[in-house]
Length: 154
Image 1 (cartoon, rainbow, N blue to C red):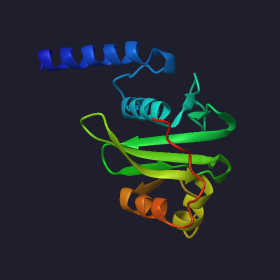
Image 2 (image 1 turned 30 degrees about the horizontal axis):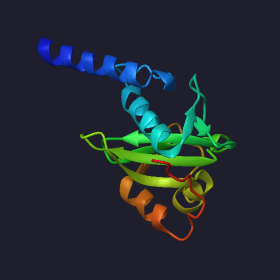
Image 3 (image 1 turned 45 degrees about the vertical axis):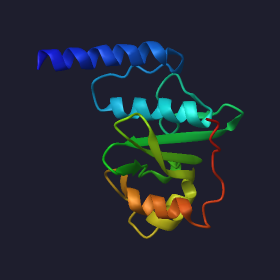
C-alpha cells in the first residue's frame, strides 16, 4: 500500500500546485471530494471561491458577486442540502464527478426551487441535512420550474 499512497500524495501535491489560485488544500479527509468539485465548478462556471469555508456559500459568480453559490459534488450519486432554511443557498450546483476528471451537471439553479419541489413536504425539524438523489435532482434540473441557472463559461 505504500506505493499506492505515495502516488496519491503526489497527485494531491499536483492539484495543490495547479489550482493554488482557488485556495483549496485537497486534504485527505471528507473535504477532498468537495474541494475537487468546487474547483471544477469554479473553472467551468466562472465562480470565485471564498478563501475560507462559509456556512452556506462556497463562492460567488465572478461576473456578478451578488449571485452566491453552494457547490456539492459526489462520486456516489447523492447530495446534501441544508436542513436550516435560513441557510438555503441562492444558487445550488450539484455535479457528479467521473473518474476521468469530467463531470455531469446534476442540478444548476436556485436553492428555493429544490426546497419547494423536493423538500417542502418533509419535516423542517431535522438533525441532519436533507439527502437528495441524483435522479430527483436531474428531473428538477430539466423541469420548466428551473429557469434561473449559472451559465457555463468553459
